[in-house]
Image (cartoon, rainbow, N blue to C red):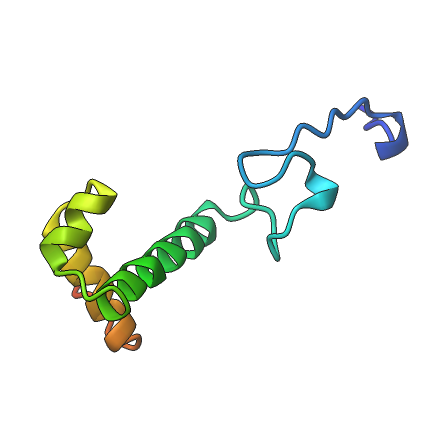
Length: 94
């Protein structure tokens, strides 16, 4: 079986929620190439929003949770990750 050349492929560059086209995407790598990287990338951005609300706006953890429609525990974890970036969560051993 022969594979067609890329030039012979009909590819529609529809992009994703990050960018309307792949060629104009601001991400350093494609989210579809490594979904776990993309989840971490998005989470870090969200965590920084939490920290900004906590530090600049002086919002409590509960107020941040209410604003972002998440649990207070999620906010606690995010703020802890930013304060201790080298802390690795424990893995349960079975």
